[in-house]
Amino acid sequence: MNKGLVPSLFSQKIEGSKTLAVTARVAELRQQGRDIIDLGAGEPDFNTPEPACAAAKAAIDAGFTKYTPNPGILELREEIANYLAGYGAEYSPREILVSNGAKQSIYNALLAVCNPGDEVLLPTPYWTSYPQQIAMAGAQTVYMPATQEMGFKITARQLAEAITEKTRLIIFNSPSNPTGAVYSRAEMDAIAEVIRDSGIGVISDEIYLELIYGTDDYASFCAYPDLKDQVLIVNGVSKSHAMTGWRIGYLAGPENVIKAAAKVQSHSTSGAASISQKAALAALRIPAEDMQEQKDEFSRRRETVFSLLSSIPSVDVSMPGGAFYIFPDISAYFGRSDGSFTIANSVDFATYILEKAGVAIVPGEAFGAPDNIRISYANSMENLEKAMAGMKAALSELR
Image 1 (cartoon, rainbow, N blue to C red):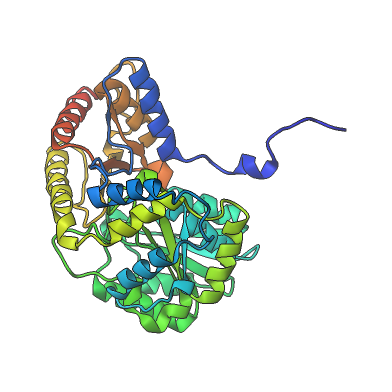
Image 2 (tube, rainbow, N blue to C red):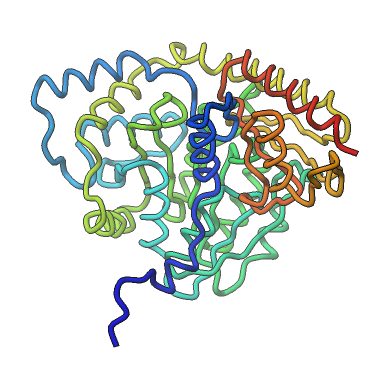
């Protein structure tokens, strides 16, 4: 019997993005007239660099507004190859697929390589979309805890012990969203050795690679050219060049896998926006020193937020090495109350801070870490200082 249109069982099992849900709630409260400081969004507050904007305008004026090849325009793929070569790997344009953001790149990769029942290893805390995309690809997630005491980083031994005959790949993210953790070169070497010996694949999400502070002790998976046939590199311009709304990400890897991922994309979105691709091309050609001011400002904000959070009683916080997030443990507040609202978990904590202090943060449940919250410092120094003061005042009312 016909039942009309109802959500499928599959769609009902997939959870919506909790980070986007926070953004939506912020919009609702602002429409109600509330003054909300949004520290939930993973989005640089800087303007897109002028060369990228100028290239987009020139593309429009030149009538470059038609469909592009599904894998992306050749000159952009060539520029991406040049960028990756700077980190140690040689890719041809045929080994690169441009997509509508790095999120789509990851999903394309999972659909291209995973079979039903395959296991995908996932360090926790994790970016909120990883487990949902793994499930959408028909694979099974195997979680690998990386605690705050571990610096939010798995060990090579832990990885080796987690690998089974069903393991297809690991999703690796350094610098990490949500923790900001950065693996050292020695840690990467040890993990790469396990990858090499086991033969499993890697999706290396390197979207925050250009946002590492105060050290050159790190590496891209591009630095291991002998693993090229096992590695899929994901990156884009959203975070490094403040181009979130332009929606340009890319996947680099073995040509046969890139072809498979391109087939997936050809039946979902097809190629990325023509104008955005021209903007991304110009962005990638901007000298690194011209982007240093933005990076330095993120570093100053990181230090300020770390210092202010450290001054709040019962907040356990570690200094992040990269990205623009800080991930404190706030579990000491569980069970406390202001007399009308009792905090039982990080969702309650985030709700309390939003309603009481007018500050939007993301509860750790979204990232598989229920004792923590994610705070984005991709906001002005003035707003960050105001937000931390508001949080401190609100938390002082809890008993």
